[in-house]
Image (cartoon, rainbow, N blue to C red; front, side, top):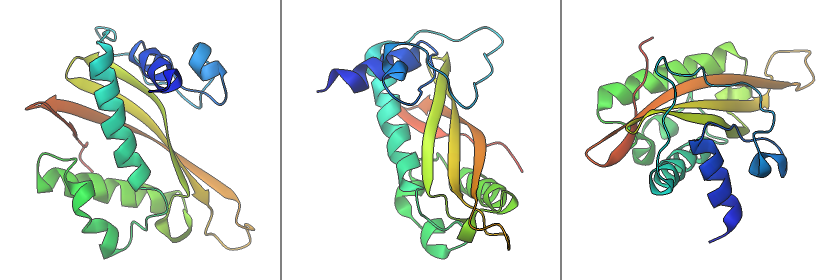
Length: 169
C-alpha cells in the first residue's frame, strides 16, 4: 500500500482538508471550503476507521462522475442505492442532488468531476463530507463555461456499515 493515501486519510481524520498537489499530504493545504466544526468539536478516530470510511465514500462519489441525474439509468443504479439505509433516504438524496445540479446549470445534469474536499468526524459514527461537483454550464451563450456545486453530506455508521443520511428537501 502506498503511504500517500494513508497519510492523506490520516490528515483528513484529523480535520485537514485535501488540496491540490503534495501540500495536501504534507499538511493542511488550501481547499475550496471547509466543513463547519461540530458543536462539540471533531473527534480523532483510528486509521482503520478513517480508511474504511474514505474507501466507501470515494467509491460512491466516483460513481457519480459523468452520470446523468435526469436519467432512469442513474436513478435505478443498485450500487448507488446500497449506500443508503432505506429507499426513502435514497429518494430524498437523489431528488436533492438532481435539483441542485439543475439549479447550478450543469450540462445534461452531469458532473464531469466529483472531489471530496474535506471530511470531519463529528463522532466515531458520524462524518460530515464537503464535496465539489464540477462540470460544464448548459446555459446558452456561455461557451461551455465551467460550473461548480459544493454540497455537504452526512454519513453515519450503523451495523458496521457507512451510509448517507440525507437532509430533507
